[in-house]
Each structure stands twice: as C-alpha cells, then as structure tokens.
Length: 149
Image (cartoon, rainbow, N blue to C red; front, side):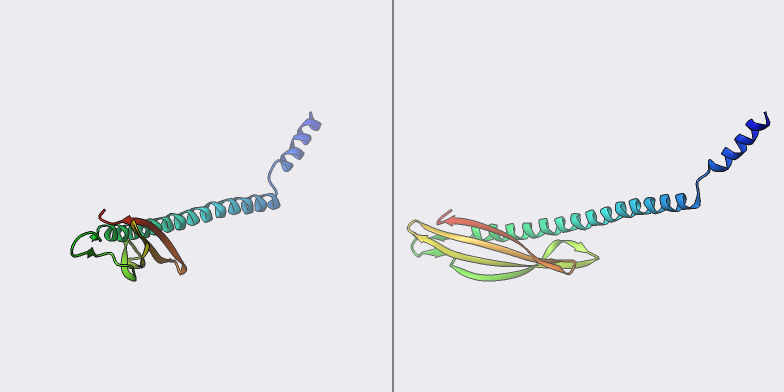
C-alpha cells in the first residue's frame, strides 16, 4: 500500500508542463496568430487595390463611351467629324475616397485612323493611377469605331 501511494506521488510531479514546453507552445501560438493577422492585413490591402482598379476601369469606360458617342459621318455634307485622330489626356477623381482625400487618375486618350475605306478608327484609353506609393498602375481599354455608329 505504501509502495502504491509513493508511486502516485512520484507520477504527480511529472504530470505538469515544464517551463520550456509552455514557452515553445506560446511561441507557436504567437506565430500562428501573427500569420492570421498578416493574412488579414494583406487581404484588406488587396481588396482596396481591387476597388481602385475597378474605379479606374470605370473611368476608362466612361472615356471610351464619350468618344464613341461623338458624331462622325464622313458621307454627310458638310462632313461631320467630332472624332478626329488625336492624343489628349484628362485628370479626374476616382469614384472612391482614401483617408478622406480624393485620389486622382489620368486618362490618356488616343484616337487613330485604322482605315479610310471602310472608315474605321481605334479609340484607346489608358487610365493611370497610384496606390499606396506603389505603381503607377494602368487600366487600358481599346475599341474600334466605324463611321456613323
């Protein structure tokens, strides 16, 4: 009986965790939590970048639609041509806010003559924008336009 009780006491001393085991498990837990927080922050930045890209694509699409809505009829008298081959740019605000400050984007619009018979022109819009002091990033749209469309 004494032997059994002494055996229980000696095992009770070995059933707890040592300080080294606790420190290692806390370090592993800290690494796991740090990875989760880093992944969350990275995902938040990626979502914000996607929002900027979508807003820039919207600006480029607006510029394409404005150029496509211009009148161009080479067969009319007098000739109507509100879409001459040219290069120009516009600076506009993205449709979102970052830290309360507006974010600018530049639309570079290029209209080139593709062919004269049949009359065909290419409209290219490159929307350039910055994100968190990285970039610049560019969203580009290209469209072909025939006369009187």
